[in-house]
Amino acid sequence: MRKDLCTVLTSSYFTFGLLVFIGAYCVLNAEKCADNANIITYADALWFALNASSVGNSNFYPVTNTGRLIGAVLILVGYALFTLNIAVISSYFSHKLKHKER
Image 1 (cartoon, rainbow, N blue to C red):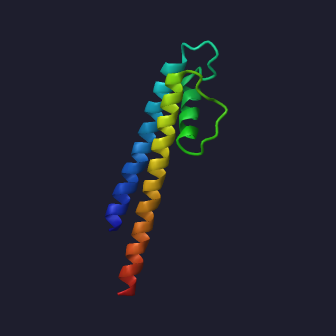
Image 2 (image 1 turned 45 degrees about the horizontal axis):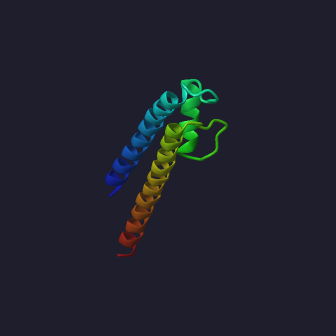
């Protein structure tokens, strides 16, 4: 069970990192042509993607519809990965507690 926990958490963290870098690239491409864009560099886009997919608070925000759609996907997938991690860790401790009671 411990090996499964590490495998799932590692793949989840890898997926999260990939999501942030790809999402930042996509948001930057969507926003770079907008007149009033505040996401101008890849660092800005990376900061937005990291915050959108985790804590949800950022000084940067997309102004185009495509950028907003990508931001919404980042938010939803970030929540899903967080929920998956909580479920896997809870299952691990629940299994350990049941095994200890036997």
